[in-house]
Length: 127
Image (cartoon, rainbow, N blue to C red):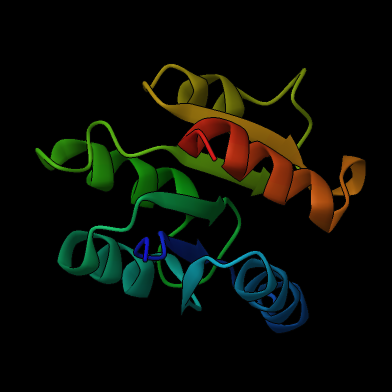
């Protein structure tokens, strides 16, 4: 039996985080959750998930700071990260900065459905 791949969801919006957890479990992933960037950073560096879903606008530590700190770690420099945000991809410097990091992908929340996230995860992880 194949081990389930761990996906860390760093998202402060409880309803979205819960929906992502539910659909990832249905698709046979092992989701873990963090409510803010500080908690997400700690979990990422201790649990080493196969992929991270990361919101940019969060309390305690924003997503860009979280991303940069994850990328400073030897494990974290290559982990695939999908940024989930409401920021515009065309005019925000934070998005440009995020995309300069390797293995970083970007989805605008208003432009996708939950199945789109699962499809992107499966594409990135080769499932």
